Length: 166
Ligand SMILES: O=C(O)C[C@@H](Cc1ccccc1)C(=O)SCC(=O)c1ccccc1
Ligand SMILES: [Zn+2]
Image 1: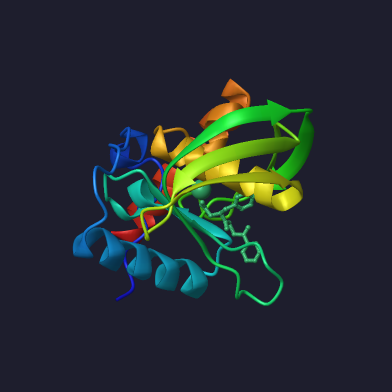
Image 2 (image 1 turned 60 degrees about the horizontal axis):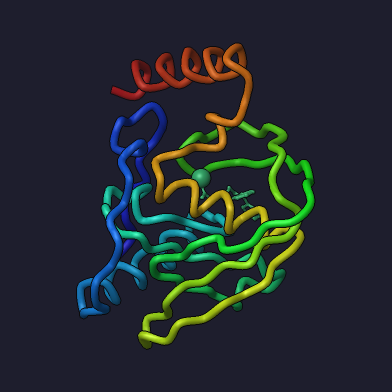
């Protein structure tokens, strides 16, 4: 089923997710629900802390036809080169698009739901998305990479939003 995506400044978005020791039915169900939620949002990625699940699990699909899903457990960036800036959004910070500087290329080591260890080299939007999602696992939002001034403006707008919502 679709999961509820937490919105900034929800403190749970700052939690550090815990490594997944073994792939069980519960983890597989969470991965399926996260993918469904990502496609429905729509988004190109989603990390477990965004749906209040404290596991190191991300789903990513940057493909044009939205048919190339990557489900990565315990993903780690083991190499990064270069630097690039890209406008980013976040499903947990609706209505905000800001430029973030990140590594141009990354090598990510992760475990698949079949329990296989994979290493993937990424550049372009996939590299940016993987860095954005892995940040979520460490409680870091893309707004944390912005200036203090921008962060305060975004926080003030978000808090106003919550009041209207309740
Ligand atoms: O909050 C998230 O993790 C999802 C986020 C991922 C992301 C976007 C842009 C740069 C890096 C990481 C999103 O998917 S926001 C929505 C979005 O960017 C998008 C939605 C539909 C089609 C294409 C992009
Ligand atoms: Zn995000």
